[in-house]
Length: 159
Ligand code: HEC
Image 1 (spheres, helix red, strand yellow):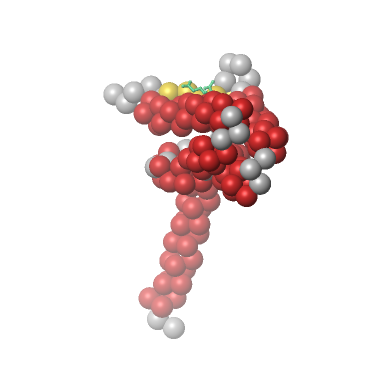
Image 2 (image 1 turned 60 degrees about the vertical axis):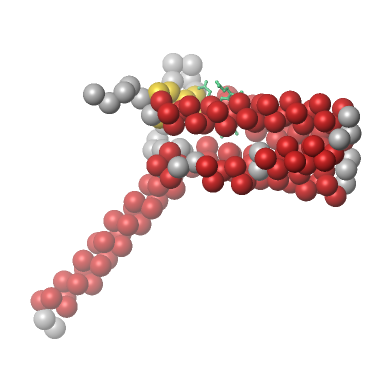
């Protein structure tokens, strides 16, 4: 066995381990710091925090539209609004921001988007406002749960 062929597999293993560590870090995200109010603080660049807060306001305004549409039994608007808050919306999150979010935060966020897709499907197939309201109540427990756990902080601007 030449020295070269002996080194190569070792180098490949080291490289693979480094890539795996990097991938795991990307999926798991950094460990959040504890904020003054006891919640976990996720530190982001101001524009990244702004992007998430914009998405949040979209959730709130979507739920407002949904609630009003439900009182009118307008299931078409219910389905369209719920779908706009569904998984398709997550494609707008840049990978660099994704990497800064803790795994649990991402899972909760994805599951909320998934719930809205289900709300859209059920609104179309069942057209039952009471069923939709129950789903809305359940998904909003996740809003409440995440807000009780996490806070977003802006990192100081780079010098
Ligand atoms: C995965 C976690 C998570 C989920 C799920 C979540 N949020 Fe948020 N939301 C946050 C965080 C973190 C903040 C910032 C809170 C802070 O810094 O004090 C926030 C802020 C907000 C804000 C304030 C926006 C602003 O401009 O300041 C609104 C409104 C909001 N969320 C609505 C919702 C609604 C409605 C839902 C459910 C449909 C929801 N959120 C689900 C994490 C979440």
